[in-house]
Length: 500
Image 1 (cartoon, helix red, strand yellow):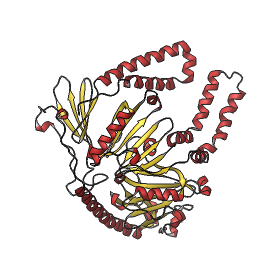
Image 2 (cartoon, rainbow, N blue to C red):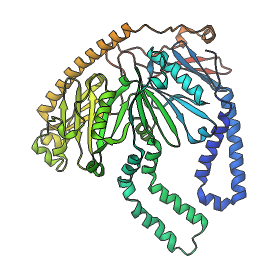
Image 3 (cartoon, rainbow, N blue to C red):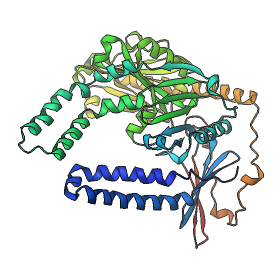
Image 4 (tube, rainbow, N blue to C red):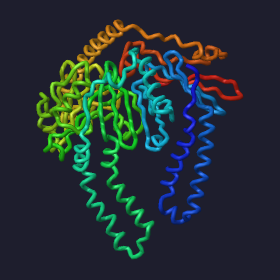
């Protein structure tokens, strides 16, 4: 594949985005101080400057597929080539922000295990180009032929009316009347309530209602389907998001029963996917599994996602959990009766919560470590906490266990997780042996120019651990991350940096 550029309208979209951010930063008070004419002139200068800078970045940015790697070329003074092995890719998303949708563009995002943020986002491409590139990358990463939308099996689709009603039954939405009193009261009683003051009041009022509104916009028309190799998640009203997640990248499931949803029997669930970077909001948005659904529908979807094994139920009341000792009431007087842990040959499940009840299920084959912690008060009461960590951000924590029982539980979890991992690895190896490997020979035009540096100046991707342990979601495949090579213009130096 020859090197390609991003879409020519990319500088314009990025410039408009920076202008929107500048307008928010200036705020209504800045508009009042500058005046409309000067404000528009300032925005025009920012737009022109942003477009010029973005055009230069666009001119020196390109991408290509070389064998089983995606290479990103960027930089003007300091040129850089990012090489991302497709075996390390955890998920590939096609995101269509509202501004980019006006121009018919989309952004392609690659999530790599160990990355603190999205690796090498390609913004922007045409929607068809982004979809085609994602299919090609997934085909090379999984060794399976790309599937068409008509070959997907629908698993779940959210009821948008239920979604809106559920967000009205949240503490943020119920606090809106109280916030309205504090926001609108002083504004109405103020003698010189100007247009700028009214606009600022409306902005403050919308800030109160921000969380439920954002959740409705992000999860609107949520749908999830699967094919033979990948989960397909589509959601969003203004910003359209299309995710492709291999089920074996899912590290665990978290099910939540909010207090006001329980009379209707509703629950929400999220999946923890190894490799998703970004802040907490971005990770939460990317990991949505069920925005809102009945308990039975949630349990069926969890069973479909965790293909290696399925929970018999997602109902916290029906799990055969082991409760903490009664002396744990001194540390958690209200919650101690809701705390529990259950262990099977395939899962470790913990539950807790009084107002908002939670259940976390982690497949034992995904367990990375088991640890025991004791604070001073726990030591005084002979209690301990057992925590099960995964390659993602989700941990299953069994709190306030009897100290002797905690050590027995940790030993049992370590033994069961080793057995589960051995079984899973054998199954994965058998599956790969039965699948013919894809052709990894790059075409002639995708072969990079010969490297003129010495072997000591280059670095290879991270190798699997020598002790055979797991370095990511799967062992040894997911060890390491993107490889980044930097070329300093004028100096002729070349150094390679292995990713994590």
